[in-house]
Length: 358
Image 1 (cartoon, rainbow, N blue to C red):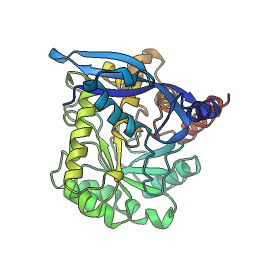
Image 2 (image 1 turned 90 degrees about the vertical axis):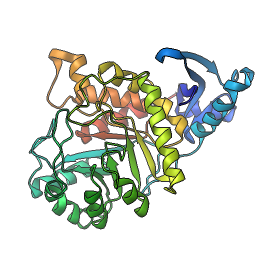
Image 3 (image 1 turned 30 degrees about the horizontal axis):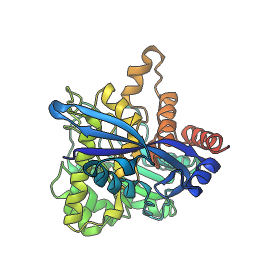
Image 4 (image 1 turned 135 degrees about the vertical axis):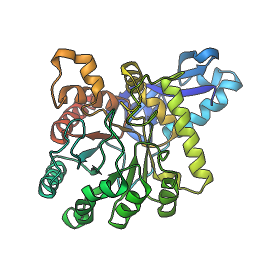
């Protein structure tokens, strides 16, 4: 557990960002010249779960005492470093991951794409609408859901996975699973990325699979299991606790010779978090830039939206999803996992254009 944590803030975009970077009045975020920052929020863990927070301009960092300055400078180096390409993806502009649940019981689209033709039609539609990655899962992990067997999970997705590269050769295929044998089967059939909501904690063999294949991993945080995760989730500080989880996992992976350039971070909105937790993670998501990896935000159709809008809730929650996506975009999030690809892509394109018009 750290004592100090660093969050880039006070962002600038487009030509203004480029000008400030050129004049050394701001730093580029993740090596992207179209987004810059000139302030850092420093969190300090205190006793009894308390956290102290202060904001400093980048020019004030040099005046901090050595105890604070040393870790902050190390974080700053990671914040500004260019992100590694993954599966040929460059993270200099936002990317969309389209969700395909091949399940009878997922929380928002269970049963809709259970048939092979419907699933393939949906994949094609999402790619046409702007998705770069398709994330396919055969097990529902909604709150309260029960675990199914590896055989059942694979039987739901095996044909779609096996034929994916033939049908969509240019697309990147992500497999949403917690189970090592499903991972092995998927990798044999062309899967490009593993997306494990348990952070490789559910199946102890999973890390060995990911390591042996050196396949990109979405490192996802979840407290508990899908069946229990919403039963009073508790943290000392949700933002910093999840940061510590990521840092510990990353250090372990590196020690075990897994290539760190293959990692994408997902704080796991809605997975073992209440409304307050989710809002804090979204509002401060730029904290995770100080780990030095691309960030994925998955807010699509999540229940926290209903908790905010109450009687104005809709089945697809497109408005709430888009609002959270655009807030993530403001903080330099590189990847968004969504169901309604066309609407979210349209929102990103328009918002990004306005943002960078100075």
